[in-house]
Image (tube, rainbow, N blue to C red):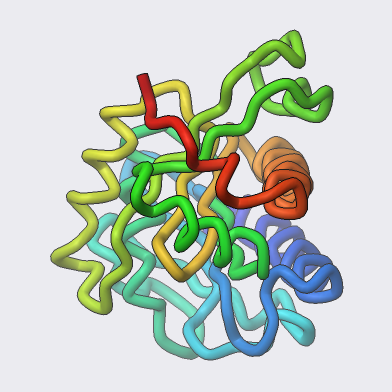
Length: 213
């Protein structure tokens, strides 16, 4: 077992319980991961079908670069392929996925625009590299599907097309965000969930009124 795995499992379980308490991963929704090692690539990840409100460290799985289970009980979600795509595209150390009300609503309301634009809010400065509220964050929207092993390239294409994005939305599904480690990824999750709720309450039509330049 990698020396980092027990601590990552503990942190993932804490984040899962917190996300559930805040209404972002109700039921068995959402999945969370962190990089255990890069050579070979290994992720600690939540299993499919687990209540995040009761998530325990011993439930966390370890998977390889092909999303195959290395250790642990349970089955990795098919969306593990999305986590791997984000890790590779962004060199992320952690990836967090939630099914909050506002991320789901806006991912449908703004699908025609191809993404959600967020600008002018002080909270944007909580995103890595952003130093002013005068910033336009574009969260691309990717069509949802059931076959993510085959669909992961669509996520990679969105990430490549929008290299400055701190997150993306799956249509009718929810938010993905990431960071260099779990601490940064958790901060990005909290910031983006706040901003999506603000934008949603302000009016979805305004959020998707203009397409990415």
